[in-house]
Image 1: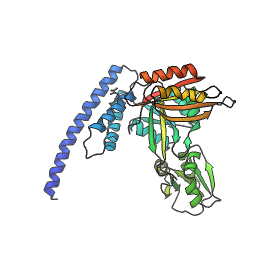
Image 2: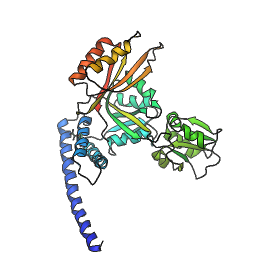
Image 3: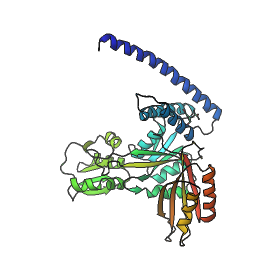
Image 4: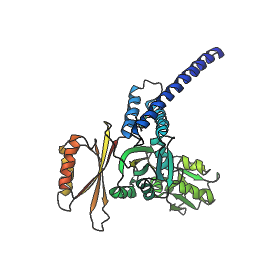
Length: 357
Ligand SMILES: C=C(O[C@@H]1C=C(C(=O)O)C=C[C@H]1O)C(=O)O
């Protein structure tokens, strides 16, 4: 390509950039005005954001991929929302955890993230109004449910307003390049589980596996201890200046974690929603069948069913159920009315847009 052709295309890009810039600021001005109309009320509208992203993907004619344009618009909306009022998102810290990565994936980079010492603390922070939303892991494709998040959802006054699905890549990390002399490996118990096979095959049996509060905490400890390594992701490796001795060591190639976003408000229907419930059945034959039967009869499809001891000290269970649709839809209302009549305990944890990104 000649210099002349190159210049022509760069001139075109310069003039397009000027137009894009003008349009971005036009959009931002509308968002700011919308913020004024909201009059200091709740600014973040998950159902609207999901609709904007879904529309952008359906309008997209390429060559940029649907995923790429959605990510760009995620950041544009994040910046526009910050003009109305910047949001603070509580997550299981320290900085560099997958929970923080999930928070940024969902809210974009204009949202501030607030590291908390536990999932309990992150919930409390939002319940007390010290942060706007909490992002908490709820299930992993290899290791299953995150029990603490499920337990906290039973009693919290917060409502689920969104979900985030994140691909999880783990690396073996260490200060320096040496593979020898590793005496212990720090990680979160879930991550040790997700890399169990790899650890068995690649590290001597005498290397101790130490579970700590988070992957980022594991990386921090490994950065201070020359005889230790950590299993954590990219963000933690970067934050604590660790070297990747082995990459993508998760046993399952599609290792994915689903996070839930909770806030103090309920969310309106977006048209493509999910509803999470927690139900308990009386301890008698056929009780469990009686719980799910109304869902089938009202044509509500179930996407998750998870049981958990109810922590009352008795041998009773709570059932965490996800269904498609919004609790305000008539078919779901019908099923919920019947459930409320028959179950010992029913709580709607929230209706929220299905993940778009
Ligand atoms: C502009 C609004 O406020 C926020 C910003 C949005 C956007 O930039 O498109 C969408 C939803 C809200 O979270 C709105 O409510 O429409």
